[in-house]
Amino acid sequence: MTEARTVVILAAGEGKRMKSALSKMLHPLLGRTLLGHVLAAAAPAGADRTLVVVGHAADQVEAHLVEVAPHATPVLQAEQHGTGHAVRIALEAAPEVNGTVVVLNGDVPLLRGETVTALLEAHERAGAAATVLAAEVPDPTGLGRIVRDPAGGLERIVEERDASPAERGIREINAGIYAFNGRLLRAALAKLTSDNDQGEEYLTDVFGLLAAAGEPVAVHVAADFEETLGCNDRVELAGLRGRLRDRVNTALMRSGVTILDPATTWIDVTATVERDAVIDQNTQLRGATRVGTGATVGPDTTLIDTIVAAGATVLRAHAVQSEVGPGASVGPYAYLRPGTRLGEKSKIGTFVEAKNSEIGTGSKVPHLSYVGDATIGEYSNIGAASVFVNYDGVAKHRTVIGSHARTGSDNMFVAPVEVGDGAYTGAGTVVRRDVPPGALSVSGGPQRIFEGWVESRRPGTAAAEAAKQANAAAQAARATRDQLHVTEDGHADADAPGDTSSE
Ligand code: UD1
Ligand code: CA
Image (spheres, rainbow, N blue to C red):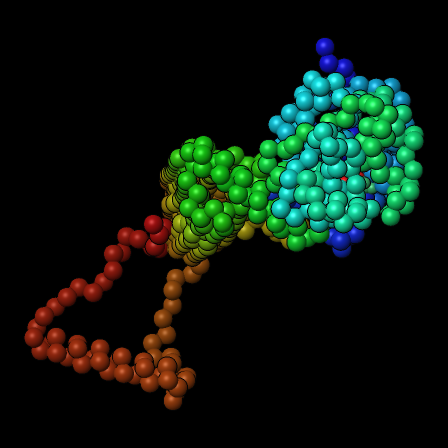
């Protein structure tokens, strides 16, 4: 039987070196905030209680907790007198806690849940009073050092600024992740002093105090030092982002996803990609984005909270809260705004923007169009350069296009309006009234021609000169043809009052 576990996350520090109005804890890193990553790493510990110590920008951090970790309890550390002080305040707010207490710095976002679990198991198996997660790092600058006794056991943890030159040479560092016996921790915290270079209560001093009292203290060495890296400024944040990108991409490639250029592919830890999907270069998959098997995404594509079904293609596109159906095709150069839902094998083509619209199975909007607040049925084709005029300046309205409709190029659908199943519209139609199923609709007066207008009204211009030459050439050609008695019918097909759709 394991005793009740408590997780304490330290998130009250200012993070001065970030130079930010945003709490350091809330800076984003591939799908979660720094604090969000630590909360996720702590989750497998299966704690009965999670306490988050907040202080600097407490309002921001508390609001974030409500969003991402409503089970966590914020505890206010109004003045930040050090990590020991922070844990003391947390435990004072939870007097019933006496089982295992896991403490995590809030700024170690690459920490894995497995590592926290391994630390906990080692701690509980050994019956230790306190166990620290340590790592051998290439550059220990600024970090607390693990000072071992001659037998190899933990003697104490010393901060760099309080360390002797010999101690500074130690490359085994304190990761800022610990497991404690809650009762012994509470007693040791009461004995902390601020007798150090920073005048703070150091949580790390608990180890020296417990060791000196003959309590068993232990070191658990992390398998991979990368997990223990902290974040103190934006340069370190960028470094962590690159490492996390590589970790995510490596795991996906091993699971059967092709990533053509891992160095320029940024996939949030919260996104999922199924096997045999292909992710081309310069692509970002953010938030709750899901890419199905066999789909191709990229190059130069950003998907935010977007679902791409199996076999779909999304090429040079930006999509937010949208759904791309199985085998559907998007782009190149498309913008899908929230609420766009594309049916199976449908198409949103080049320079098309869509918003809050449903495009049914097999329907296509191939070129240069805006589709806003529309419902399009199945197997319809929307001509090039069409606009769904959804806004009357006050309210938004819907356009409904049926199935198997063919609308001409350069149409304006002035919503609210409907085009019925199997209906056609001519090029340049301004659709203000509903078009019944199977009808053809055209609008605007007949095209009018004013012969010779440029030569008479704009004499001497380049246009007039060009017209003159073309007319002279046509006249000469006609004269030659008349001489040869060749006759031709130069009239267009009289059935179609307007061009219809472009494919
Ligand atoms: C701490 C450790 C150091 C370790 C390093 C790992 C101590 C004394 N030192 O140093 O041994 O190598 O982490 O990154 O613990 N915080 C509070 N309240 C406070 C002070 C800090 O909540 O009063 C929080 C911070 O927001 C941060 C964490 O505690 O999340 C660590 O604080 P920080 O000041 O970064 O400690 P370090 O000096 O890095
Ligand atoms: Ca730190």
